[in-house]
Length: 143
Image 1 (spheres, helix red, strand yellow):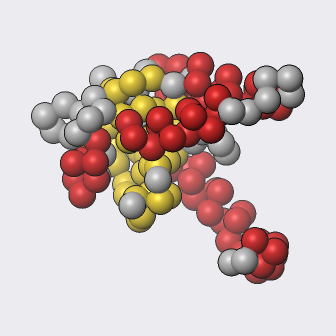
Image 2 (cartoon, rainbow, N blue to C red):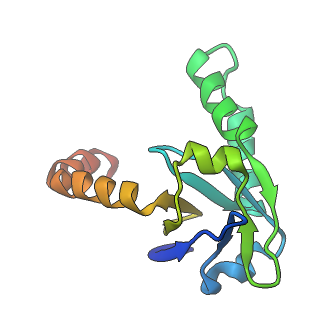
């Protein structure tokens, strides 16, 4: 399970180190793709396969299903960790998430999210203001 928040820097070759405590989970590879809220999602190969199976079962007759599948699948790239636990971010993903040198990696159960540190701070401030309202809405889901 991925949890926590970690501060990292992209180097001049677009390499990003993943948190050491999670690296062993990516031994069989990883997939990085466009995420929601202008961040990137990183999945283990196993979790990616689960997600792809769900996407494959979405109705292609619905425009929203097609658009969501296209965003995640066409925006995805297989990556492998190097000997220092780093992945190389493709330019198109770096641009999508408007990543600069300082990034935040957030653990969210079955995936990691990669955020530009300024966008992450802005997102947190906004969502923290709405925490009570968000929590009340989740009551309908049994949380």
